[in-house]
Amino acid sequence: MARVSEIRYVGYAVPDLEAERRFYTEVWGLTEVAADDGMAYFAAAGTPEKYVVRLRLDAVQRIDVIAWAAETRSDVDAIFAQVKDAGGKIITEPHEQTTLGGGYGFRFFDLDGHTLEVSADVEQGDSRDLKRGEAIPVKISHVVMHAPDHRATVAWYEKTLGFRVSDWLGDFMCFMRCNAWHHRLAFLPGPPCLNHVAYDVLTIDDMMKGIARLKKNDVDIKWGPGRHTAGNNTFSYFTTPAMNVVEYTSELEKVDDDHHEHTVHVPSPDTMDQWGTGVGGPQTMPKPAPDAGLWTPAAA
Image 1 (tube, rainbow, N blue to C red):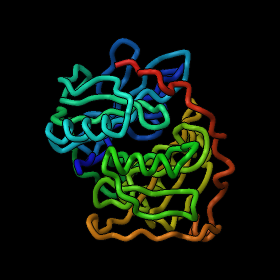
Image 2: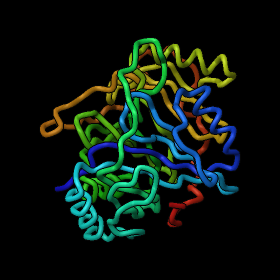
Image 3: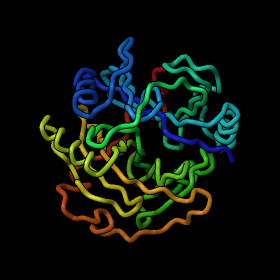
Image 4: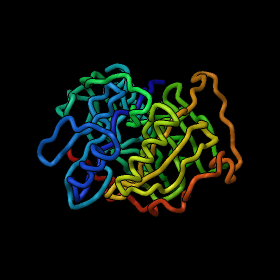
């Protein structure tokens, strides 16, 4: 089976582009690399992905696209066939892309109506090895989504994009991988929408320094700092001015991609947070609601 290999970027539509732009550059630690026709693109310093966040000005707030990488053009074509075989609704067939960075890819709706993109041969951007203490994102770590029938959605992502189950938290949260990292994607029950986007930082110290920077910028932590059990990663959650949830995380574990057997973790406060010393909790997050962009193609 052909598989996606990594996450590329998340595209948002927001009514106040300037507020989100200031957050991602001045507070969160991304770098704006391009802007044109009401869109702005932001890179993370530690990854060669040309950008990891795309913002588009629109009166309707929504998730425009979640983009995944494939290793080769042949993989793009094979994944396209898998999506079609699974009854996926195609937005664009594989083609030479005219979006920033170009490449070869296609777009389609997932089982719940989110716009996804799979691409290869995308132009790379600048990247560097971060130093301990910079406290800025290395790259996107993972995305977490809600799905009305999350088990069916998990099975669909296995069948179409080649994700593998790494762990379950009870029967309500599934962690999925597309490479050796424990998870790049996870699903929770609920109306179809994005729960949050997590960004790797270099160390626990970087996460703590990042928390301090957000606090100095009057951005309150919603939950954390803490350490999850599934994936063993540290966490700290915040909201952007548009109330999109973002996370700083570190020390996500690697697994044997070919032989890892998933565990079903029993839900408990200690499972959700091994440390138990942070503030807030999942109840402090924005209440999930169906995304406004479901089954509606995003702007290119």
